[in-house]
Image (cartoon, rainbow, N blue to C red; front, side):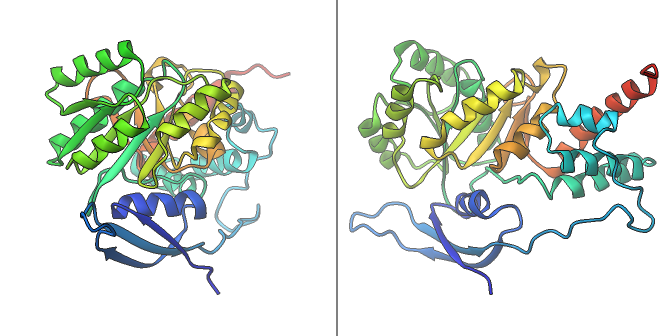
Length: 333
């Protein structure tokens, strides 16, 4: 019997994000209800979503008829993927899928996408059917402000009412954010603390609200605690924003330090600034948070890719092709 759990948020997407973050990509949606505002003075309506864990994936053995055997852990291409952070099982299955699916490009990517969907959860970020409040948190320099602008501008282009709130408590950060937002004609406001943020959230009618926070040192508990106090709201979805250009273990350790903020989603940036963009696959699997988007440059909003298994399959195919080519020219030991 399925163990049902209830999630409440201001949009179907936000509630689904909460369910997937806790139950995984195969969460079974049992019921969705729209509730009226719970306060006498009104306020946003609430979506109540009931979900349960899905059935565990069937493990494939090495002798499945018609399918190449899963490569050994010592396979050089598998080793290349595990160096990017992928688990040995995920890496081996991707290599198997790549070698199985060689042929028409569309077929290969379809096979890769099917495998990726078993290990990485992706989720929509556009607020269909309600309101989505996303707070971007992460270390300094990962591109949170640019990413917030990309998301806000892309949503506005698609016809959504948007609002960008800078909540850094840092004058220089807020000033830079305001200058950029005004240059793109985006609605912008500042919030110096949690009280001002709650006031700004009550006053905005935006369907998508992006909260841009100043960089917080993940190894400073006081900085994390201060940010936790500012973002304390049941309707705010915290999206951990990380660059794929750094050291894998350092990035994973930094991500663990943001645990007090209870991040429910993941955004990965700067895939264009590394020779190993496949790290995005390893980070997404290891951090086990629904992936919302990837960024591939500084252009607003052009260099933004909404997360999807086809997009990740494209990245996987690019990575696997290079690893296979490198393994083919490696001299025998």
